Length: 82
Image: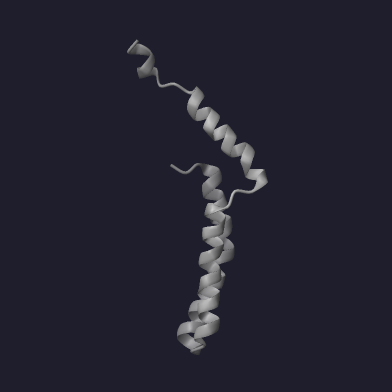
């Protein structure tokens, strides 16, 4: 499940990617310039994929904290079973 920070990052990326994708669709469908339209759509898709897959040095502390929080936290049901 994605956290609030991941959702905000995705929204920020979509703010940049959606205008490029819409411009690409206009070039592709309305103006008939398939090369420019395809490149703009490809760049928009690439931007979202890179943001989703790429880990920047500034993202490392958040990733470590997420792992540590997952291993330290115990469910109350697990403590009752012992």
